Image (cartoon, rainbow, N blue to C red):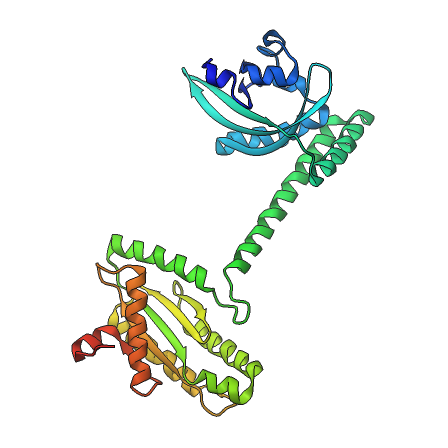
Length: 331
């Protein structure tokens, strides 16, 4: 073994797929008070309590076989005095000379943290239950089922959290962060396949007047209703998001300039024809259709210039950036 690895500031243990220790560095031996012959060619689980064996089988092996690696597994190993030593274990599957090995790096924990105490109590309860019952196989199956249930719950919770992190709370639309990530993704696809891609920036006309006259509560209602109209008229594959304040954005894959202008006009009329408490609400829209030289910033800038032209031309307008070029317009 390389001398630097042998005396690295962390433990290193390489085990076979059967769990036998093939290599170990001196740092680990010094941590644990073992000699080389005490560990090599011995089963790695010989240094574990029953509870930690269960953790190792229910977490380490499934994940390293599925993903090829395991990160930050909390585990305890018994030293030569029989004392329990806490470690954080990172592992990776590695093929060496035609043989697969599971290389593990172990960092000893110098401080206890709150959840560690909870795990200790849980481990004691598992160990007590294991020794008190003869039906070890049935109990292990129960534990596996519970782990699978918890993993399913965790994935569902993570999915909900991800959705919340990408959603504007007021309107229920996607938020600016999601929009920017989606625009980058769609532009990459456009640069690859050159299928038309268009972008809208939509602004509610005279929105400040709504807040000043009717109050911010009604202003929020207007934002929600405009968002609902946009979402209702969007087709599958299109992304609708709140960009900020009274501005919204839409990404329209497989949409050329003419199709984009027709779609924007339908949105403009839908908002205009909606039954508003104030009697009238309108939107202005700026459109850009992607070109081979465009990046995200350029698309947004040009769509914003088209929106500005819609505002300057009296609001309640739809303007495509290409039309500005034809007219010789300079925002």
